[in-house]
Image (cartoon, rainbow, N blue to C red):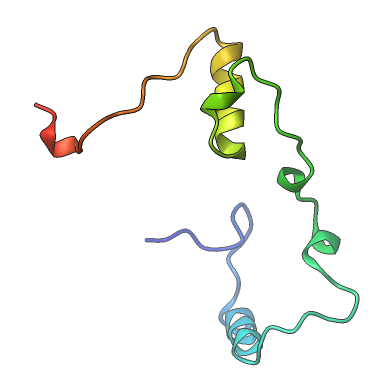
Length: 89
């Protein structure tokens, strides 16, 4: 069974769910002056990419965070895999 939203709080009632579905069906127009940032913080959008010792390894911002943690723990990334998983035996 999929988790009910909002996580950590009582599930929405059936009338609340119907209201949200109707709003989405109507185009989910936000009230004037409202945007996702005004609803709550989004720390991910404000974080700078971490400094790493081997920046060429990271292909995207998530890789940079993974690499920073590996380096913090004194670890190195594994070499890139070759072939398909079914070819390993």
